[in-house]
Image 1 (tube, rainbow, N blue to C red):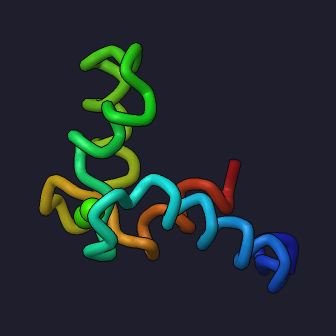
Image 2 (cartoon, rainbow, N blue to C red):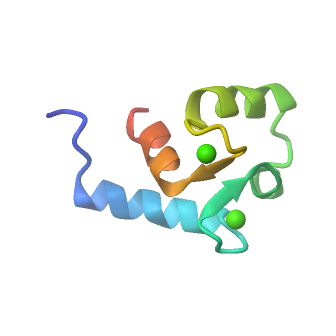
Length: 72
Ligand SMILES: [Ca+2]
Ligand SMILES: [Ca+2]
């Protein structure tokens, strides 16, 4: 039960996701990540891709974002 996200936490993650999704298409791309975290090294992005990009389409959906953030 401990991995159950509260509604409050979920709403918080949605807000974070929306703030990163600049063009509002429902996906966070590497470009959008870099726009918000300009100092993010390529290795960190590659690591994010590896652990979080479950369907390997090169971008993060809300579902992937929640899965990643929810377990941290
Ligand atoms: Ca986007
Ligand atoms: Ca993806």
